[in-house]
Amino acid sequence: MCTALAYKTKDFYFGRNMDYEYSYQESITVTPRNYPFHFSRTGFMPEHYALIGMAYVVGDYPLYYDAVNEKGLGMAGLNFPGNAFYMPEEEGKDNVASFEFIPWVLGQCKDLGEAEKLLERVHLADISFSPELPPSPLHWMIADKDGSIVVEQTKDGLKIYENPVGILTNNPVFDQQMFNLNNYMGLSAASPENHFSDNLELSVYSRGMGALGLPGDLSSASRFVKAAFTKMNSISGSSESESISQFFHILASVAQQRGCVQVADEKYEITIYSCCCNADKGIYYYTTYENSQITAVDMHRENLEGSQLILYPLIEGQQIHWQN
Image (cartoon, rainbow, N blue to C red; front, side):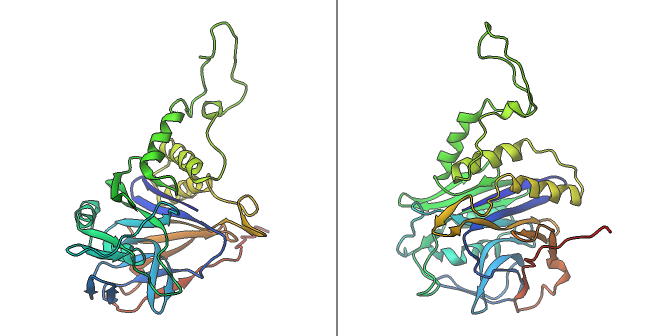
């Protein structure tokens, strides 16, 4: 599954863990302003905001998993099996396919307010990229420095939720995820006090006991609680190094290790990559399962007036800095 995160220190950061059992050979992809987007039903977009993010590129088309545009708006699609439901096309609406939803929004919206306005006429239609690539069951988090929303389309229609925690995982639906946090309101980063009984002398015997009961399993509902608690209690310095380090530490709290989530015989879900994009500066940082060293790609070092995709394959082998 996956976990997405929006985080603000001096700058705004957006990223995610990508959890799955295999890779599609995705790459860091910069889409410059003049790359021609041909959308399935909504026409041609010859000019747009430049994007940087992770994408599986098929036939020179970037199938973005997550991306940030040059204005600082970020968006990520996460697996939503059993709940995502794409409708037949509807006249009078912007019929958008799930695979093109990220560039459709980020290409023309400079902030969350513009995205929310655009969503008023969006209809997520049941449109395949190709016979080999049918629609993936997804929901999305969209965020900028001022806020975050979640977009879900189920059989009940398109739902847009305010996201005060800046976290998204997978199932269940987002309003149920938020309601579930009520079960953990007693958790704290501080040491607990004895409320069990006045007749018992109970004492704190370890640091961290204020968070006893915080989920530690890798289910999407538990990861939502764990990531929300970690993020909402997170304290980071404002420098770039401190901010991205803290961001990756938050994601690491819900990362998946090979062998812990079995999906089939000898198949295990892992955190294929973790990413953190400084949305203000357009710098995309990432690690992979085998490479824990942070690697960076700066979109503004590229020709953003171009018309060709710019791809950077993931550096996947472990990079070790020897000190002797």
